[in-house]
Image 1 (tube, rainbow, N blue to C red):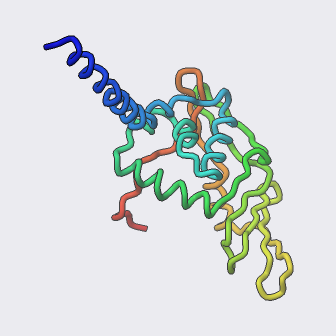
Image 2: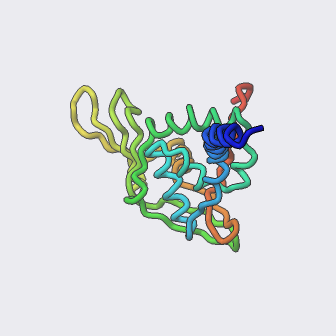
Amino acid sequence: MSERLRNIRKSSARPLAAVVVAVMLAALLPLFASGCGAATPADAVRNFLKAVDTNNWNLFLSSVLPDQVRKMTSDDIVYWRDTALKQAGQTVKYNPGQLGMKTQLKKNTATVLIVSGRIVLVKAKDGADVVLNIGKQTYSYVDSKTKKVVTQPFSDREKEIVKGLTEYPTQKYKTQWYVNFPLQRPSSTTTQ
């Protein structure tokens, strides 16, 4: 084979190789994104909540315990990336920079509690936003008929709902902190 023909084949293979490398990197991005944890349990939770607020898939993955990320199937990835994360960000707004947090540390695990600040449930009552005042354990909304702000204390049922929005288990993994959040897609056959 002539020298010129070999050079032509080599030069045409380079763009193809670049495309293959780019596709491989894009496919592996979720695996690389996991493992970029935070210095403290509270920072891990702030990153997690910020990911929900901004629908940021990479930040979401990097704030979740890598063991949980590795357990995900392709169906789990599609569910969390394309459905659940987006819906969560459209229904709850945390604004994590304004939330007060308390950490209950136990060796390499910790529970982070949101103890003050406001969490907004978007259009949760008659099309109005419901603002949860965590420190005061009250919620408020604008009444659609009177247009006045109504404030109520949390009932026992509401306290249980709020608990799911304000308690986050975290775990230390290779010197960094992550939210220990299961990423398996909920089964469609679960019973209530």
